[in-house]
Amino acid sequence: MRKLTPRVVHAALIAALLLAVIAAVSAVALHSLTHGLQESLGRQEQLRAQAMAEHFDGLLSSRRLALSALAKSLPGPAGRTAAVLQQALAAQSSLSGAFLNVALFARNGELVYSARPPISRLYAAGTRPYFIEVVQRKRELLSQPFNSALTGTQVVVFALPVLDAHGEVEYVLGASLALAEAPMSSQLEGDGRLSYVMTSDGYLVSYPQRARLTRHVNEVPELSPEANLGLQGFQGWRLSDDSSRVTAFARLRQAPWIVGLQAPERLVFAPLAKAREQLLLAAAAFAALAIAASWPLSRFTARAPVRTEALAPISAQAPAAAA
Image 1 (cartoon, rainbow, N blue to C red):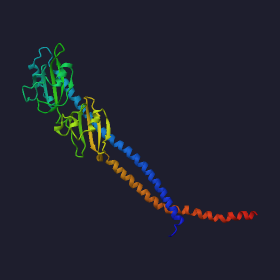
Image 2 (cartoon, one colour; image 1 turned 120 degrees about the horizontal axis):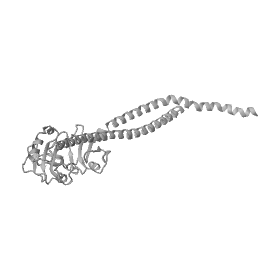
Image 3 (cartoon, rainbow, N blue to C red; image 1 turned 30 degrees about the horizontal axis):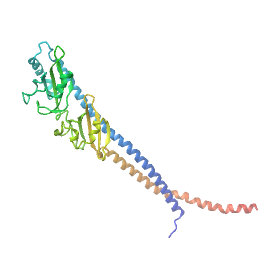
């Protein structure tokens, strides 16, 4: 077997040392890149959820102000009758684009006025939880999502009391938003990103599939169990337990609602995969350069033993001369 020359050994040692340094640096850089970029990309999903929450906040705020302005424009208690109120509400055609329907109910729940022809004239709101709460508390509220028997669709209702001269509830004014229509409806984007809005107790008020509206998130396999994190108060983003999707949550200010976003992990972290690939390619290029540079560098290290051996005779002659 042919003995390796010192230069070959030194070249191999230099290459191994350089490769070890490159591998260590690459590992540290890859860890920092993964952690930093993953956090940044996840934060972008959270910002998407916050932007959607701000959109719904603006929508609810504008509708609440519109209904409040309508209530203030109604005739005062003196001489106010159902017929007078019907005429006043019928003149407010500008609200038809803001709400699915505007309706007025007597204190007992009987329908006094509806901007849209009701499905049934026998409809009464007296048993609806939102109606009972408005009468009892004498204040405005936003209802839970429900299937309206008045309009035949899934809605939420803004409701506020109309008080008599003694400060008692005489009528209840309500305005509904259709959950399945713009601007309330959510979309499933072509890239697989899903957005939805649920109440603080888990009922869907915005979802791409109409059949799922007003249902609890636990009845929707695509959303649970991640959606329960939002119900527990979590805000931010997280990777699912099986690392297949990223979920982000944000809360509204105008209503006890929660925005949820869900996206495939491969979609959210696609820039990270590309950055990893570029880093590994750069490491491979440096490794090739290190191997190529190890042979020229070995010239300097291989000469060192030769110079040491050349000095040996001189060292041996020094004692003889002294004798």
